Image (cartoon, rainbow, N blue to C red; front, top):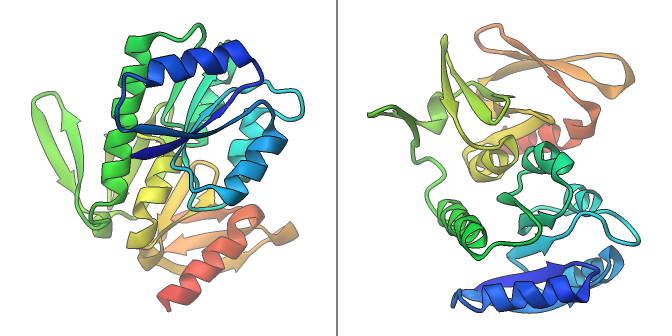
Amino acid sequence: MIRTLLIDDVALAREKLRHLLGAHADIQIVGEAPSIALARSLLATERVELLLLDIELPDEDGLQLARSLPAPAPAIIFTTAHAEHALTSYELGAIDYLPKPLDANRLAIALDRLRRHLARETSNPLAPLCIRNGGRSDYVYPTDIDYIDSAGHYACLHVGKQVHLLRESIGRLAEQLAPAGFVQVQRAVIVNCARVRCLLPRRNGDATLELLDGTQLPLSRLHRDAFEAKMGKAG
């Protein structure tokens, strides 16, 4: 069962979600919250695997909640009438972004994506990533990847001088590949720690990472503690 928390300040919207989710036997609703404050309280006491999360709530917005969730964070499907936040939601690693009024078929597609995401999380982190290009499938092993950045809705996997495009968010790849030694160093960049030669300090706590092939990547001070903790474990 996928333990699910509904977060929406409109009671009728939560009622419609409950009705639509009733068609999915593997979804278990463990709580409802009309505010971010109550959602935080429930998250502190309940094991939750999925948030169905509105964006505009009375006390905070759903994007703020998504940014502040500690790892390992629940998967998120945003449900909102405001289409302008879609890109930000995917940058935060959302499974999907559903416009209101909600549609049963569109919700079903989002839940199928969630199931595939959860299956990947429990799979071998060293398993290859499948890159599809027309009828061709290339398999890229995490140990061969130097770093990953983004271009629009695609992740760019840098393997030596080759770049492979994968339609996946940086946030989800960072979670998936963390057990394989990857860490996020910028909002849209993750790096294979085994490829890092040295850290060059800069002002204000920022730094530059130099990889074994000479590539230089910026390390944000916001991610520096996590990077150094990961490198400490790697060492």
